[in-house]
Image (cartoon, rainbow, N blue to C red; front, side):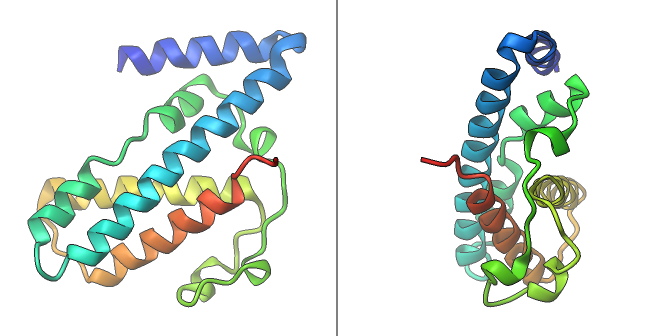
Length: 154
């Protein structure tokens, strides 16, 4: 927790400085993107092994990092300022779960939904709730879409 607070302070200090604001915003975007990509891969692996090895799937999901998102949240920086772009599932529809994604209109909302679903899955794992494997599938699609949407422009 201390590391998260220290990182949050560092982000906030850099963001307050107008000269460094753009650089800090870009670092946050890149770090969130990397965290989302890793979590998307973990969710994909968990979805693939869930039927054969449910304990491994739970372990993979439990180990999903939230460090950067937690630091941004603790800093109080608005996600809408960090990821201001519009987003629409119709622009790049996944094969499943499009209906559940249709109400998301901004990249910031997509990122927040993805991290909330990670937290929900972690809590389910902690309390031993067995959930329909579709919830892992939804998490996988959500994280994949968020990783694509946050990819820094080249």
